[in-house]
Image 1: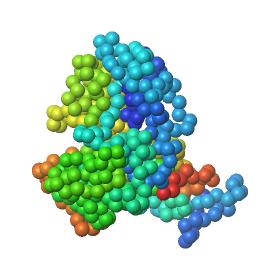
Image 2 (image 1 turned 90 degrees about the vertical axis):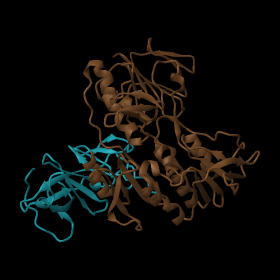
Image 3 (image 1 turned 30 degrees about the vertical axis):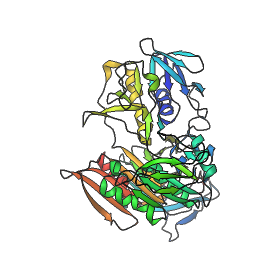
Image 4 (image 1 turned 180 degrees about the vertical axis):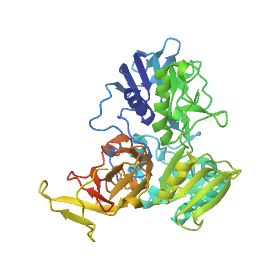
Length: 384
Length: 137
């Protein structure tokens, strides 16, 4: 392998570039990034950065003395892949020829599908999104958050601490039931009401009101909730549209094997745009955790450099993610399903701090920690 | 483990060793080696706090306990080989050098020399380098 093109310059792309150099790749390394910024850390965008507690410099992922000897092209999009020729066509008219390609284009926030007022409606995915939202979150602002997932909950938590009046609207009967299960999802979502945030569950939003500036939202039961600012927090879609001409399977992310290798052996996919095969279920699943974007590129790069005949089975740690809301540290590791047995092993459901273990056929499969950092880490390690 | 001259037991945790080689070496008594099994960590509540690790291979290391990215105790982290992973955001630090092996942290933690005295007490000799503390929030 003489030239590797990494398409995407956020955590997964940077981690892939680092892994390439760390694993001895000394050929040409091109890094293409659609955003103009150097790689930055996204989790603080809904938390410390939105609160104004950390700066843009704090978000930088690269160390001051870091030099990957790469050709960085930032503010440039990949627009088409000619997989047979190993060529990537770029938005600046350029074209890259590479014998190894890392797909790390990430995902984009889902936007409001219908008509919307010109101003006051936000999503939160990029630094620019965060700057625009931060400028509008002043004390006394009425904020409606659509979606009580982790991004929505973190925005609500940050906004209420800034003095906003916050309402969260969630279409599912229980927030976070996908990642945490119904019982624990309800428990964690209880943080909203105990911190002065109004939560409506099991109810959808039919319209964003206002012509120029947003004035509120209309709910499926006809009620209207007034708003000065609306945040849409309803998930993200993988950035794979530019790959449509390729032969790659793009069903909810670029399909890859359990080492990140796609159906074209010179192309690997990592981070939020990728759906790796899960050996224990036989399904391809997109894992949008920060941790996966950080740790999986090393696996994919190893497979890319070794070539198709050298696949080794990969043992990964249990998936792990965290969320900080209302000053509470929420941590989860493992795979949970709706029919898992959940028991609280430390603390109690009505306490500010507890640890819950999910079991299937008696075996621990996942763990949730709420302000239980030390014990959570022990359990997380056990699960891996 | 390197054996050094016995350090007598002092009740206060911070003691100044009278040594000719260095003018003033800050030394901390961590805990008895017998109380720190392999794979375990001990947090010394000094200012700033220090984490002492006993690796699976039987080596002892001391680093600053506070992650340079955000306020988290590395003694609560995931010890593997000669690396520790922050229990919150998974930054990884090399215990030998203090260097960052994985983000989001960018700045190294300080490393401190560890010795075990003849009484079996783990002693940390504090470096005189400046610590890299996380941003205040």
